[in-house]
Length: 428
Image (cartoon, rainbow, N blue to C red):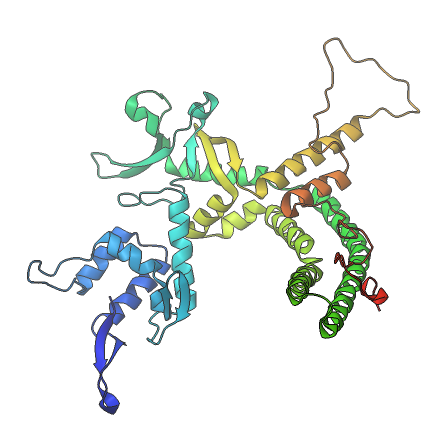
């Protein structure tokens, strides 16, 4: 839709090509622009385009009709409109003219993804919390039941919107309907409860700074060692070429060893290039979480409905509603791991503040009053261990990277069973 198959008969040849459809290309642009606003569902979009004059092309068996939702969904995902073609799984620049710009296409994909993640069916009622809220009472009972939305109009014509547990339809849940405004207020209030404390943010950032300082020293040593290994490979390759010129070693063995050296050189070059990329990526991810969670409620308040939808779905897998409050939540990664670290940090500070002053007489606790320290995953409770665990989760390594490859500091040596020059085993 939006393009035509045409024939170019210039230069005495007939060339099949693609041209923009002057009648329907504007409808395609309109479809992307309307959907990018976040105010249209596929059903709304199909109706709007039909009202403005977009119909399917009639065939001998089928008259012109409204564009189907499936057709619209495929069209909004199709990168052909950006000027690309796909052949055997590979994407290439096409020779046809693009109809949609990258920014509009990207906004459309974000909205489509957010509505897919929430498993929403938005053909009847719109709301940015649909797909994110679940029944708190069912959750307490070990069940998972989504909250769905209902519009009610009373005898005076006043409309009300409610969330209710889908299990009420099978009469397995007795949770009452909750006004949608009360649920909205509860979610906004809940955002204040997930805010990271300034002490946690400061401690993590201070530890990250120390980690980066350690990384700089370790990386310098690792690069030095990798460079030595690369020089050793160059020496081996040079000596192999000399042996090949002598003609005393079978050519097939020399070729195989040269291929092995090239593979090892590629591996070492890539390792040299990525010595800091993994750790830096993990630290950027932690920093993004700290920034977002420093005041998430204020950020949430500044968002429009579509932005709130995406923020809810980025942070939370589920928000559990009980009456007019959020009783619990399940966070998505990586926020779940950073939130767990925040809780551990809070427990540690609380335990430190509860430690008795050595200079004061100790008072035995009252009967039945016992304190039980919550275990900290990772075998430690300091901020060093917390940051170490976060970096381990995010980059798959400790906060201090290995200073050398697993083989040690020694440079590579040839494993050939024949003679070789002395400088083949060491760097020149």
